Length: 215
Ligand code: SIN
Ligand code: FE2
Image (tube, rainbow, N blue to C red; front, side, top):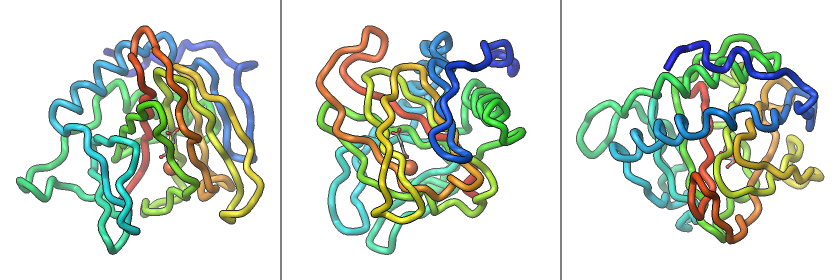
């Protein structure tokens, strides 16, 4: 897998600006979906899917795995962790293909080069959802978030800086990438309940991969 894998992808018109600093690149990684899924699976064998408990005590419907840095939630809130608290080992490295994709997507979205240090992987089974939230536990808000959708489609809600700001509903399909940063970096966003379905490559769920600069 070479680092310039994503460089010769076609340019817009399939690029949709949803807010200042937030862009959807429809189909951006469709051709690379199988390799991306293999990378996801290589992480999941080391960090098995888990349903986290929210700080408010609810079990999330989304199953999570991660690499680079890990993700923790407890009654004190959310936190990134460099090591697995269970065995003291560093979390697995972010696979090269995900580093390459993050860099190219951020570049094409106008954010310059991007070297993420955390990658959260979400699995949405039918009915799973992610309520409106801000990604605000990273130390560096100058870096964008790069978010990849694989498998079943979903409706992405994208709002403003206040929880009750009006939200747009953006359909996301297999292979789409969303990048948000700059003035949109702290915008509220979420995923509406994923509908039943079957995707020939991914099966009966949606996989989302987000690449972040946590530290
Ligand atoms: C997230 O907000 O962290 C994930 C968004 C998504 O699943 O598309
Ligand atoms: Fe998020």
